Length: 136
Image 1: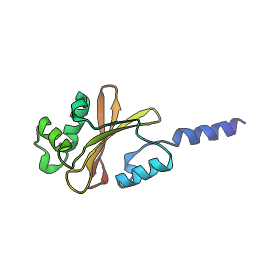
Image 2: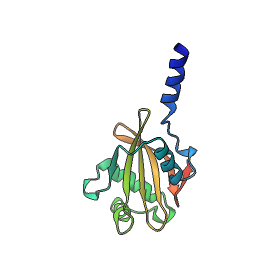
Image 3: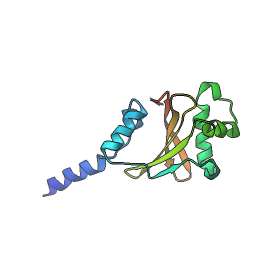
Image 4: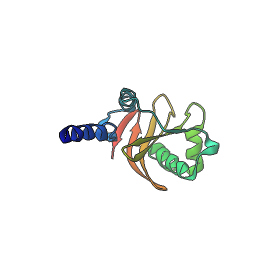
């Protein structure tokens, strides 16, 4: 019985483990989520309601692109939300870790970043370039 419980605990604790580098692109990430019946706990899309920390993540995400590296926070927020960009922040909970996926579409392909949220701070985990996940 103890062995059975140990096996069950191992499988349940690792079922939703998250490591952005284990996915080649965001399509694979979302397919894995779908297979596990996991969805975002919060989706933030309204620029008028973005919190301070979300604006900071947006600024960092947008300025990761070489041609936008000198953009101000206001310019980055405009790029993130203007026209067909339709930027969004999706929050996921994986084994006690809160992960934020910040993404937008400045052209045909997706750009963005994965962050781990820690209290009122965040840590960059990986970039998204042309829908590919690039590990740091």
